[in-house]
Length: 115
Image (cartoon, rainbow, N blue to C red; front, side, top):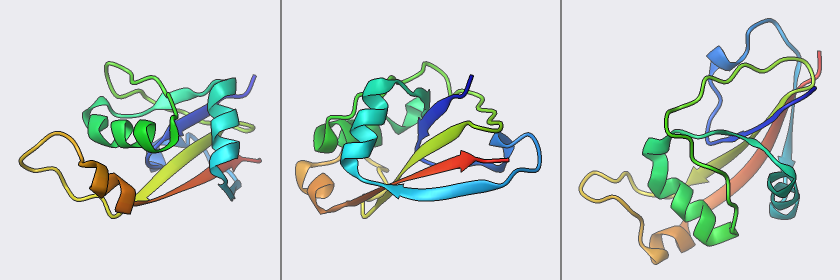
């Protein structure tokens, strides 16, 4: 059985061996379909503001785990990563304004372990 994860970043520790990985960009429509079909969250609950921005901008409802999950991918598994540019660091508050979310750039990529 293969698993599709959804997160905001990749970490070397997610890969337990030597693998060949394919990366491809995804449209928002493709991501919406994949999330609706079911993904495993690889989200850190401390990123609640970014998760809220993702939900308000795209309506993507990925569950937030209570603790950061340990992700281990193998052949056939994939990780959908949402990259965000343009959101400021939140140092004195806990959420982004609508204007900040509107000005940010969101890109989606899928990393699949092929062998």
